Image (cartoon, rainbow, N blue to C red; front, side, top):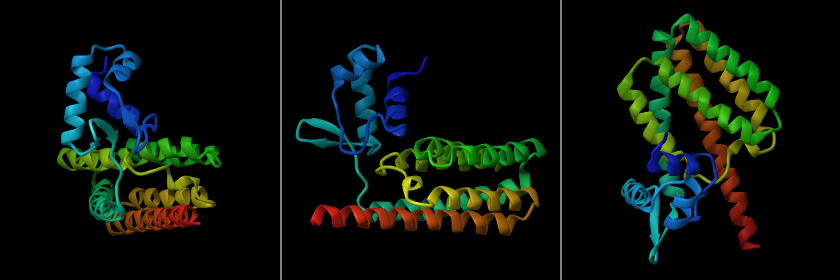
Length: 211
């Protein structure tokens, strides 16, 4: 059974609690069927990790500002690119077949951004594991935890789902061919396009607020 920290973190990651949402100790304890003490300790831990922030006397799910978003994508790009390079070098034939199968299966979910977002996380995590570098995987887990603080998914942007899967295919092709430089470059292009899409969505939402 998961502990209170893992349960709350999973709820943030899957969008049950979104940036700006208020987390109430008693409600969390009731939702997850645990006592308030481990919930209180979990909330304190998440606040220390900057996943939550104070709003008066309450705790809310943190939101990334423009600069924090840029910093996160910078770190993510470098770590993900390294994972792709190492995956091209170390991935087993079985791991490569799993990656190929993921892309094929994901094409059946085009038009369903939430399902694709979950599949996208699994795809990237599989590449992390295929790097066969436990320290890199640990750092990428921290980065992807912070990504839960981003509002929505870029896969809901028009046409982004098709492009994303084509980008995933290019990454897998390079890994399959043991092309380390190609895998790194394909992953960098993929993250760059995702970041650009997020910036466009952010600008669009801000313009709607101003109108």
